[in-house]
Image (spheres, rainbow, N blue to C red):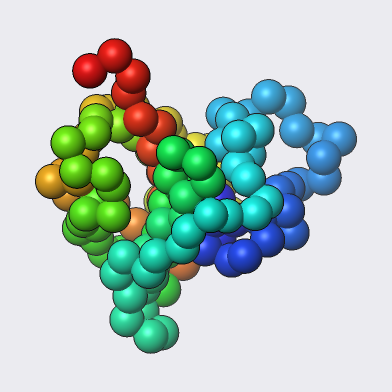
Length: 140
C-alpha cells in the first residue's frame, strides 16, 4: 500500500495482491477510496538510498504518507514536521498485519490523533511498508 503513495501514480498498485474481482471488502481498500491521483505537494520525510524511504504527499488539506524498508525488520521513527503547526490530524495507519508472512493480504488499521510534533513509529518487515492518511480535525 505504501508504494501507492511513494510513486507518482498510485493506480498501478491498486490491486497489489489479487484481481479486482477477487476483492471482498478488504480493509486496505478504504485507503484507495480516498487516495488522489494528482498531488499539490510532495516531501521526502526520511530516506537512505537502498534502505528505506518515507514520502508525504498532500492533496488539499489531507496528507498521505508511505514508508517502506528493504533490509530486515526495522522500527522506523517518522517525524510529522510536514504537518501544519497547531493543527491536529486524525491519522489512519495501515500496517502489515502478518509481517512474518511476506505475501499476506492482511492489513491492520489503527487510528490516532497527531500533530506536527508527533513521531510515528512504524514496525516494518523486510520489503514491507506502512501507509497513513492524515486528515485535519475540525472544530478545534
